[in-house]
Length: 463
Image (tube, rainbow, N blue to C red; front, side, top):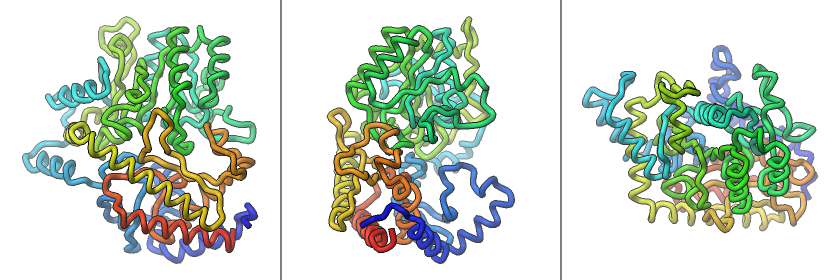
């Protein structure tokens, strides 16, 4: 039996991790003297300290302690073709060898070429480029507020739209739920201007629009909650979101930074058959480079035009449309579109095998553990997944509230124990699992199953 008091388990895992990754410990100690917490992004930080890499290729990374690690973080879920794929790398090398590719700050034809390819793939009238998902969602909300001349932003509990001050509420769970502002330093009005709703709760969505609909500028959400276990939107919720925003004059913004080009060579909006007013795309479309886009309606995005009467100052930053980013993005999007019929079914089959295998490992040890990411009637089996440990056999989360409630799921196992536990067997996960790439092999998956089995045995012994 698992007693759910995991202090002994965590102490042992951290002790063994420190013994296995001593060079990373020394590197972390050095780095903390100059970088805050030793990193530049909190998602890369975990207890007792992160390992540091010296190489990355395909499904694996090599750390400074010479471990070859099967990686499911895959560049914040960006590397659908694995780390440093040859098709992208060779294109970048070619540009550099011809003396081209570093920053110019001037327009080039490839900017228009990439925008046209992306617009055609996702069905958008206009595209504006920037460098980070945080900026894209911020600009999208600014456009929505300017277009509607309203201030309220409706978002989903547990939804992460980057460190965007216009959406930094309800990301993390507190003792009172998902109703707190997540960061100091944002305007005091954030508490009143951001409204949080439960994912997949159609009744509450209708209630909110009935009471606040004439004040809501936009409803922004991820079709799959990236920071909350890759729970996906039901068809009913997606359709209701579209209908209610149209009815009340608000804009629908789909944050497809993670899901864009992950399930098909477009956004998942194509699979839901829902056309938002604005979408944000990033991660995969950059081919491993910082390239992000806001795409959607011309009349909304044209508010970024110099001649717009209610102009939104959407300047994507010094490095927007960076030459090498455009090269990588163009090659990646063209590659995914050209190989869509073969690539995505392959990823779906790998995802199905991975999920089934992990669940079977735990079941064989008498532990209730489940994976998210299965087909839901709209989305096919996907290459994104998380693992959760329900405290009741009949618990199937449909929202961040369900997944992160310690009375319903063993959150400590998912978020704190799995990471170091699996790294003892050279497997790196995020939020329980993460993202598959085309480069994860059957041999890799077998090693993953063995790593999970070792964790399960240790959990029964110490957990």
